[in-house]
Image (cartoon, rainbow, N blue to C red; front, side):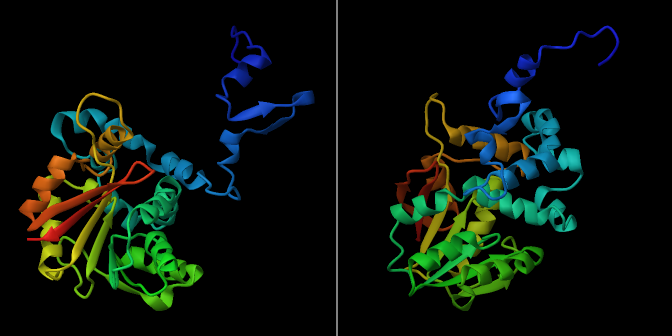
Length: 286
């Protein structure tokens, strides 16, 4: 304790824990429901999300830059765009993959409960990360075949993941960059938490590449938090701020998705809400 500083009562330190741990008898401590979810062995553990925050949370130092310029605060702070940084820091990439499952994993069953994939023959998961989404969908629909398209350094981590899920024989892995091209062969193309990472211009480029390969009777599915209009609070609006500062992207309203899709050669056919924050925005080729 620094000289001249009065030591706080022990109970005060307990109050400062914000309920993460609880004091038992004889100054022993135990978990609370909040701290339990940070254990690696907890069901739906949030530990990977906490770990990635620890590694990259200084991106918030770029908030002012993002607010003034509309550019990524992460790039300003780390001198690299987020996904380039992950590619050049192989120790961080797996943590990021696991964090995305921890943060968004609960959305997968909500999506599968809300949307019927039974008519889909081949589902392309674009930017599908470690494969948790496509794996869960293939498990739900045993006749479905999948295709996962990702950057090369991600694909290397995905192979083992699909084996663990037991679906590697029904899912092809293709390396590439969706700003350059997308693979053909699927009748449905799914983008979950991909479009919100980018500016409108970049999103149109990605979706236009999809339009080049999707069949005329195909379906485009964008799974994102659709921003409600008006001034009511919404987690989608919180996501919007994170997307601005982290990758330099944006969340959209339903009307904004309609315009975005039209500029890429699609028409908005439906928006299906789920029990989670995300909705399934469906587009069909024009």
